[in-house]
Amino acid sequence: MTRLSDQYGAINLSQGMPDFSPPPKLIDAAMKAIKGRWNQYSVTWGDRELREAIASKAKNYNHIDADPERNITITCGSTEAVTSTVFALTNPGDRIVITDPFYENYVPDAILAECELVYVPFTRSKLEIDEEKLKDAMSTRPKLLILNTPNNPTGRVLSKQQLQLVADLCEEAKTIAITDEIYEHILYDKTQHVSLSTLGNMHERTVTVSAASKTYSVTGWRVGWAIAAEELTNALRKVHDYFTICAPAPLQHALITALNFPPSYYTQLAQTYERKRQIIMRVFDEIGIDYYRPEGAYYVLADAPKDFKDGQSYADFLLRNVGIAVLPAVALYHEEELGRQKIRVAFCKKDSTLRQVERKLRKVADTPKHALKVAPGT
Image (cartoon, rainbow, N blue to C red; front, side, top):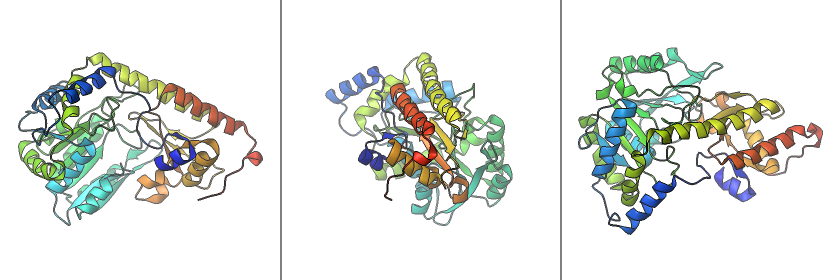
């Protein structure tokens, strides 16, 4: 969709990458690192000072105790952290439980590792995890469970009560959990982020993953991290070493600056995305598009208008006739019928970009249906 967006000169709301700059202090830190002595390999599991900063952040925000030497690995983004963990901890034929819908990389991770996928759907009007199907899935004693909260694409933030059920089921089945918490600081409506690792005995069987991409608006830097017990970390580090050697060294060093930002940075981040969320929700309300109110992350999962047969046809219409690119959400569903009517809209854009989207959508909504012409093409 990004390639098609470029082809049609559309506003790209299909991919979760900001169209605004990272914090100036972070850019300055990167430039200083590149001009300095930070252009060669770091130790494969990451810059020691960055790991120390992550350990401090994990303790203060996530309430996770982590030793920088034994429990933290710096990776090439959260995606590589999850991939390396899947390869490190599974054998061909092992089962992996994921939610439906899912972040797109989890499925190919399992396929490449020759594992069997078991899907647990988000259902009902609020897109909540189907607890009975989760119990059924966990009764097969899967090797891994991959959980993303705050969730892409649903915007759901799993509550402590829901996570406690996950923890109980993981402990009973002796399942290791990978929690992708990359949107941990982007929360709405006083929702609280809880790390699964802090519940019960899950500290010993959870790999907690996050990254700089979303929190600091540097999706192209590819610096993430995994926090896990020493035994899990040792396995993960071996695979990470041979996959990538290390994450970009100067950008690792620059991120020490970001990890030391004051609490006000994260408050302002949440307020910024709340304003952007309100713009998108307001225009959807006014033009009559049904959507699921996100509790976290920066996506809205919406239903295509009834005039369109499915989310794909609506996405095509928006791209070719309105100049807006969105993602047909069926691409993120195993059970395609659950996502057939849906689109995912990323609102991690400048306010001016979102105002332009608002004007375009209003103009289409005000145009008589018989006057709308869909451009030919596939």
